[in-house]
Image 1 (cartoon, rainbow, N blue to C red):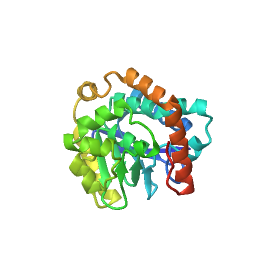
Image 2: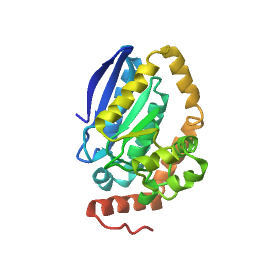
Image 3: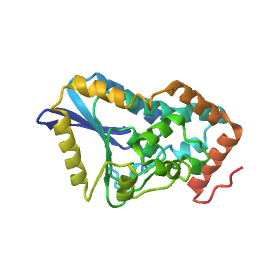
Image 4: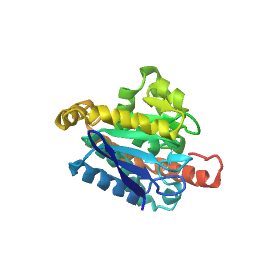
Amino acid sequence: MNFKTEKLTLQHGNAEIISIQTNDQNSLTKSSMQEFAGMIENLKKDESIKGVILTSENHKFFCNGIDANTVSHLPKDEIADFMSWICILFGILLKFDKPLIAEVTGHAMGGGAVLTIACDYKFMLETGCRIGFTEVMFGLPLPGMFVYKIQESLHPTKVNEVCLEAKQYKAKEAKEVGLIDETALTREGIRDLSIQKFETLFGYPASAIRYTKANINQKSLLNFEEHLKNARENFTDPIISENLMEAMKAFKEKRKPVFK
């Protein structure tokens, strides 16, 4: 299984814990993204669950983004469909109408940062973790829906640093720029933050949380289909797809990519 699940029973209701366990780097394939999307849609309908924690038991990686090995072997005519799934998954997470918490206990790069910023609350371990939107390092334009959410979350002076420079942040740095809400020294400390947040939120009417979340994420979902269309068009651009394939191969071979 790509994801491990367990229930967390609290005073005012139950939460579902989803642990990413796709592979040794917790990278994402099309099938694992589709599986995760289906899980979120089912939890949205499950009235016994009032919130979700996204985490990982992997001590090095929370999620290392799109799977390099899979992409490097894709036929060119399948790249756009594959890559568009991280955008689709992002939209599904933003539309999830219950509290969603990311426990970043390992590196969150590229798609891992995307999953993180889609969550309502983001808690990060202070040691052994970095987070960054590394898309441009792999020759990819950052899709508009991601940029919208980044602009909403970060200090304005840091947006270009995050989006154009692909800067990677340790936990306390990530909190300073707005990528992360709070940090802790241990995994237990991270879980305590999640429990405290849920104990507060679960005490409020679910309907109030549902509609308020929709209002909060409305701007990031604005023109979503247009951004998705643009992203697909970008992914079909021959230069972008060739640069992506080169970057993924270089990543596997542990060398610097040679871009066009």
